[in-house]
Image: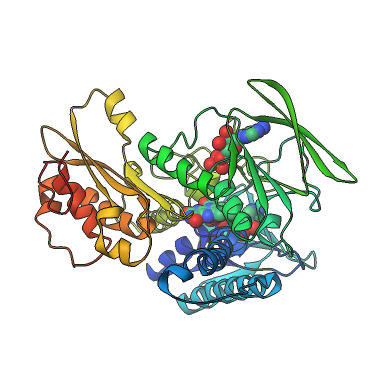
Length: 473
Ligand code: FAD
Ligand code: AMP
């Protein structure tokens, strides 16, 4: 079978590439080999099956449960005896995932993309060998191939996953009971989200993080504020704690780690290893394709996602850059446009980051530390949600918006939010910064009242000591 474009991988990088290529009038196939625990194939990759979507479903359920217990009374709602049905929560999560992954299949079909369930392997000459569940092999001939094979959880050699006691993030999303003692290894985005879910549902959660600094990728002020709230919620985050091994026993798993004081141990019922992800390229490339892989396992590409082999491209988690669904999606779409001879550009300086904890954390652009290190003269505007009428009404006044702008040009360099709906609010900052907005542009843009977005408006005003709803400091 001949196609203009064959995409290997149906995750958030691959399926948008396939759809856009079809929109561009090309004949397209999308090969995906994701298999659920029951052996069934599903489109959508990590994001829909074991990542973004199921984690957000559980974060929502567990947050509602927490709020019912901790916050309802303050609203005057009497809800004694609230309890959690974990099976019902997990059923909802599974239904959302099934609906969404089924939706991807429908989107591909509607766009005219031919889907193949099975393992895809690139052969020399842009041939793609597809092996289906029954072992049957078909060979597709492509003018262009897009590799979008994604990533997989990083396994610590000293703590191999056993799917019972030592879990990866996928297992941690599908637990059918709340463990009494949960140890999460890694205080990154995934570790914090999973730790929050099970903490809210009643687990005692210890998070072991090798680095001395909490959330080193985030703005320091935001990380400190978040750490304060996580501590209040009972997340026991231990920094400078490098896990070296674990031994399962009758009373649970003994986790061994070293910190400044020396060798330490703790006992947990379940251990979730969330120490990052590695690119997944197992069985993807036959000998002689010419596609190369770097020392960390990423497929080598240039700034346009070209692999250097004529008409072979790679996008998403299997190539350099942040492992985020939206980064992969934009790369997939951009490559499909480039294949069709259209212009495409990705601004890697403006990839937003969101951590869906409570309070939520989101940022785009440079941190204050980075601006300082670059020697840029800057001004800061901070607006606390305590001063936001909407946040107060929502009983969600923790956190703040912090805006960093160039002192000389007034251009916004970074926006950092910790607080309610931070992930939604950051969208405005992304648009503003993509248009190279100045602080004044945001100041002169009317924001509806009372909304959380006013906090961004006020932060822009505060950068020039012109905030209205907060004291100017
Ligand atoms: P993947 O989603 O991994 O998809 C790759 C697909 O290709 C898979 O279906 C795989 O089976 C298939 N495949 C691989 N090799 C082959 C082959 N040879 N033949 C056929 N098929 C193949 N990101 C966010 O932006 N926001 C979030 O909130 C977020 N939350 C997350 C929460 C968790 C718990 C996890 C684990 C991840 C989260 N991520 C989040 C990261 C996000 O899931 C990834 O960045 C995203 O899925 C990457 O997309 P991708 O298409 O590159 O790869
Ligand atoms: P992320 O890269 O955002 O998924 O975060 C993974 C986190 O796990 C990082 O903050 C790492 O420092 C941390 N980490 C990696 N290896 C270990 C280890 N052996 N013990 C504890 N934390 C670790």
